Image (cartoon, rainbow, N blue to C red; front, side, top):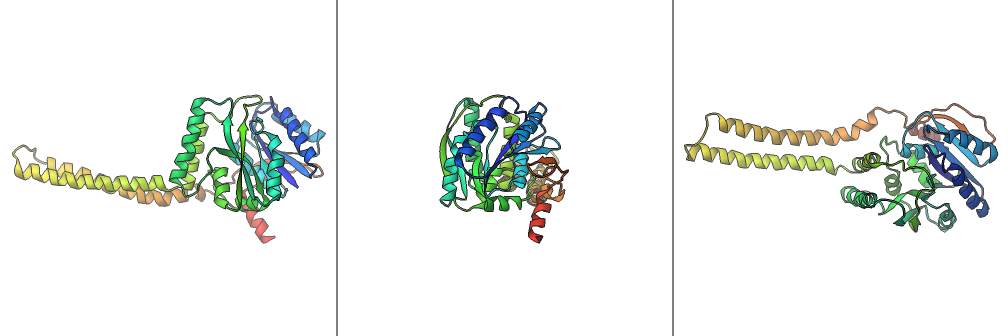
Length: 327
């Protein structure tokens, strides 16, 4: 069984063509399949089109989220829903070609647990976006213990084992490609040229790209917090030099202001101590903050699947993972 996850946010312009191409590729593969469309709070006719596709094609599964949760959580909702032995993640804009799915499937049959698309060319993207993507991967790999393959995205095929492990990871701020790398197993690249968008506009403007980059750095690295500690020690050393300087001015010259030495030394020393203290507290607070609220990662309003009634569901990874363990 092969599952395909397609997150959708305002994709009415290219959704029908996306389904046509996906269906053509999957039918030709002659293997059981499902296409799980996750509607992430679209404000156009995306959901209406998805209901039509579901009515026309029994392979189309529609997951309706209660609001817009963002691309990474929409894909996570799809991971909760799929039932396949292997799962492909692909966007609806057709920049990542569905025609590569059979090659991914063959590599999976040969023993790969993850087959990730590696972009050798990115047609239709600005020079700034290309430059920022290169910087992003290299910065996060430098700061993090988890190495993300360069020039990759979420377009990939993952084995059921990998899906099950990712479902047990309850992070609130998610970078799925980094989580997939952290899981391990046998991971194989598949090089391809990325096409321009078939229709519509990009759903990742600069602000969202910066947020995604921040999630990746903060979720998989404590280096920024440790840098604060190093800055604190550097400030303390500077304060020590300042103390020596202040004493020299006070004892060896007649050019000094009453009370200046005490104030100068106190400000430098306390600033260094405060920076060190904030860094140590931040080490613990950064790990606790995003987990302590224990909110569901997303809320599924309902699921349309052939052969089963629509049901009102509320899912969180933690509850679902515990339920599987008990079963």
